[in-house]
Amino acid sequence: MEEGKAAFGTLNWAMVRAILAIIQWWGFNVTVIIMNKWIFQKLDFKFPLTVSCVHFICSTVGAYIAIKVLKMKPLIEVEPEDRWRRIFPMSFVFCINIVLGNVSLRYIPVSFMQTIKSFTPATTVILQWMVWRKYFEWRIWASLVPIVGGILLTSVTELSFNVFGFCAALFGCLATSTKTILAESLLHGYKFDSINTVYYMAPFATMILAVPAILLEGGGVINWFYTHEEILSSMIIIFGSGVAAFCLNFSIFYVIHSTTAVTFNVAGNMKVAVAVLVSWMIFRNPISAMNAVGCAITLMGCTFYGYVRHFLSQQSASSNPGTPKTPRTPRGLMEMLPLVSTDKQDDKV
Image (cartoon, rainbow, N blue to C red):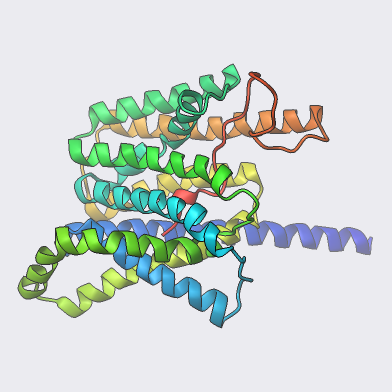
């Protein structure tokens, strides 16, 4: 009897911890997105490269404090040559991914940007098929149909459509997919968590982006300082978004270790819906009925894709219990599972 009560108490605590993890993950993610959009739209700080650079600097400092000073996570040692041979190329793609996300936010509404970002599973599968010649089960391709259809419907009916912002978001999906695929080969042998990932990649990303930010946006930033009225409060918001971006990495780590793969998939898509709703309440960007339907179809498609992928993964594991669960298992030209990151790496920084 006592053992039953203890097990029930443990189950309840696990459920509470999972709910709290999801809520704080949603909170930090929505906060970063809304703050970035507020910076571009309300503060008139229209410099996405500079904002991205601020985020990288805050993440570099935050990761150093978390690992070296507070000892919150053990440092994963990386050989010096691997830092340039493996980490630097990842950091370059990582930097492009974040910059394109901020550029898209500069030109299109949060709702449209978040819906396009949901196209990432499709771009990952297509890239693996076209470039890396990997083959997938027909159920994987079928599960992508509602995602693609929802994206098309949302794009056609978007009332605030901007070609530049749309292309930035779409290429951001390609960058996210490329980063996910490259991680399989470049980071092979290293078990990085979200904090160690930022610890190694954020300094490289800062170095990569600093010069372009100064050359392309330096004059505009200086002019903004001279013409903007409330500098102090604006700077607090800008650097606050950088701190929130770093905190988002902690929340990702926490939610991954507190939920199952299925729960994480559903919560991730609901997070997009929460971000869309909150952004509409704040910025009141016009959304047509068909646009909302397209967004809903896309999110349901992402949830269905995650379910299919999880089901096939479990099926593969049960039929081959001794085979490692990785898309790189040599099985000739048979149908394979797509390599799509389960920890939503595109949420970082």
